[in-house]
Image 1: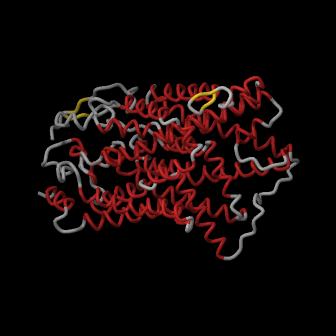
Image 2 (image 1 turned 60 degrees about the horizontal axis):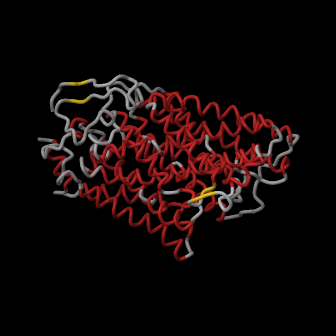
Image 3 (image 1 turned 45 degrees about the horizontal axis):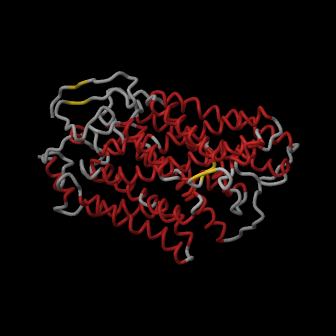
Amino acid sequence: MAEDVAHHLTPEHPAGVPVIKAGYDPRLTNDDLAPLAEQKWGTYNIFAFWMSDVHSVGGYVTAGSLFALGLTSWQVLVSLVVGIVIVQFFCNLVAKPSQVAGVPYPVICRAPFGVRGANIPAIIRGAIAVAWYGIQTYLASAALDIVLVRLFDGLAPYADAGQYGFLGLSYLGWGTYALLWVLQAAVFWMGMESIRRFIDFCGPAVYVVMFLLCGYLLWKSEWHVSLNLSSENLTGWSVVTTMLSAIALVVSYFSGPMLNFGDFSRYGRSFDAVKRGNFLGLPVNFLVFSLLTVLTAAATLPVFGELITDPVETVSRIDNTFAIVLGALTFTTATIGINIVANFISPAFDFSNVNPQKISWRAGGMIAAVGSVLLTPWNWYDNADAIQYTLGVLGALIGPLFGVLIADYYLVRREHVVVDDLFTMSPDGKYWYVGGYNPDAVLATAIAGAFSIASVVIPSVTGSGGWVSDFSWFIGCALGFVAYFGLAGRPGSATQQALAGADH
């Protein structure tokens, strides 16, 4: 590999300052995918990243829902702690290869999958993110509709798709969806440094409003709240199985950001800084957020006479226009933050990886944004079967992709990646394998994916054993890990031949 290093861009470039060596193949390289010359993110930036990921309407509802499974407060607390510690452990695992190499997820995947085969996990991950990007934008717009109708009664007919609407969405819904779509695209278009500043502000801002909301509701309830938010009374083995399902729910909720985390850990100035940020942003932050969420939800019972787990609806019930507007703006900002972090940046890298010279990071992001509208996510969200069989099936593949990457980096390559070879199409490159594809990784993903998909589809078709689908991520991850390690370890396998070539 040539040792000439070219610094092509300014620090304001969306993906930082790239290091592109003269021997890098343009079919694998652009300014967004190349290794970074300088990694600047510290502990707080990673901490703020997780605050933006956690502090959302979805995170609020998920945390609150665990208290409605029939578990006592301490059982839910244990489930949350165990679940989020598992998430932290896996995030640290997936963070290291990208942080050390300074490259995003689809590029580091060239090591196990091959320089061409990496497009397989990239396209799978991109498709999942585009679908969820549209759904999250729609849910945020629907929440904004509720607030606007609450403030302006005359808008009520325009919020009804049956009276005023087309393609299944009301006129008001189209307006709020378009507004959020443009706002998210604008933040994204300004580049990664602007996104970093946005998420640095976003998480703490949501905390301030949530503390105010919680304090107000506790005061209105005269501090008489019960943390037992379920009428069920679980005993014996049912407590254990429900706690395991709650733990799996927490891990599954974060499965997308876990797989995507390499796209952000690449900016970390050191792996230790990333680990510290993960500790503060996951166990510490998630517990505080969960307790705050539960106290707020519990206070809605005495204040409004019913349990409300949607924070936007809670805010809309407050008889104060300023509080409604502040709450709506805050939770809209929070949703924009998590959507950009979890579902916008990652497909931007994924689609750019498919054709680096024709698709930049910004172009990849806009492909994802346009695709999210063409899917008409409001129709998807209202169609339970579509979500179950499409997003559920695609989501089941996240576990296998995770397992293959972790097995390859830690067990097969012993934490050693030759960064320059991630950007060469030469048959002598360490990640060329067979025509640019590693059959071991592809087959391992197919085997593990078949089982994880079956764990989602079969229970829903047969109507039995539904608990199995709660663990589809674990099933896929474990099988992907074992299958790849077994296939890659065979004498004469494509992986072994590549490793042997690296030794000569």
